Each structure stands twice: as structure tokens, then as C-alpha cells.
Length: 220
Image (cartoon, rainbow, N blue to C red; front, side):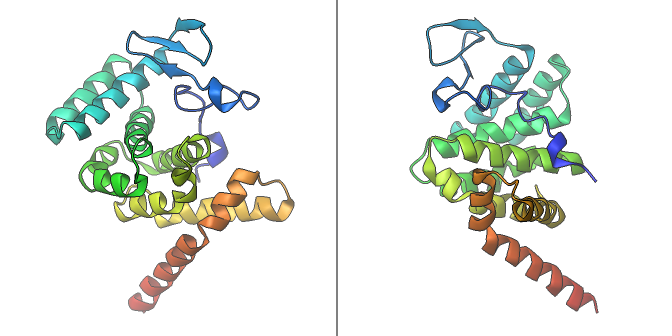
């Protein structure tokens, strides 16, 4: 079993806070000239991982906005992957971040994300494996916690449902995350953000448990 706590969530600093003590205004981003910067005037060269993530994110954003052909986009992402010697996990996470950013910038994030995934979830599936599912889920959850768009955090269960419907994240992965967070809540160690997401997504998790029971009954 892949341990969610092992997910390397801080490799792509452009979308997540630099550290837990930093405020949301200290989020690092990568500019078009290849330099990373924070909310101050100080700029420093982007790291190898940041440059890779930025190239993939820019590629998928352009693909969605310009309605590019899937095969050409897949070829371009793979070219960036090999150029930076990146893993399939790195590719999947960066692609998802691009899709999430487009949703975040809209007035109706869940509608935009659903529409985007109907066409582009197959790009995520090209870099798919069981450990990647954990990374995708962890990336979604961490993005929702730091998003400037409150609708992302409030509707994260809708985003989960979209990724489930498109076979990007399996029922088992979602329910394993829920079990882990329920244990943390019982032990009193769960974070406020995780507790909010857990409770706000209760209906979604109940639906998953119900669908699993239905499949078992039909097999009998």
C-alpha cells in the first residue's frame, strides 16, 4: 500500500506555500523568464523541478485554452518529461496543477474543471499507476487548501467526484484516505483543513461505499 504521507508535496513550490510558517502571500511562482520569486522584490533562479513544472503547466493551459489536439499535446508533454528526466508522477502532478489553475481563475471552478476533465483526463491517465493516484489526490487536496478561490476548498468533493468518474482516482484510494483521516480525527491529530475536507466530503465517501456494496450485491 502506498503511504500518502510519503507523497512529496513540496517539490513544485510554484503552487504551494514555501513552508508551513509562510503566509499565503509568500507563495512562490515561476515567471516566464525562468526565475522564481515570492511576494517581495527578491528574485532567484527557478529550480530544475520548478522549470519542469512550469513548462508542463504552460503546455496544458495552452492546450485547453487553444483547444489543441490531444496527440500533439501528449507528444509535447513527453518531450518535456524526457528533457528534464522527470517521472510519471511529476508529469501527472504538473498536468493536474495546470487544469486546477484554469478552474481556480474562473467564476465557476467546478464547471470548468468538469468540462476540462471530460476531454483532458486521458492525459492524466497516460501517466497513471497506483502510486500516481495518491499523488493526484494529495495534489488536489493541497491545492484546495492554498487556493485563493474559496469555491475550490468548499467544493473539493466535487473535484474528487470528477476525478473518480474519469477513472483518474479509484474508489479504494479515496476510501483509504478517508480511513486515514478518520483515524487522525479520532486521535485528535487531524489538521483543521483536513477535518473540513473530510466532513465536507462525507456525502461523496458515503456514495463510494454504497456503490461498492451495490457491486458486491450484483456479483452475488
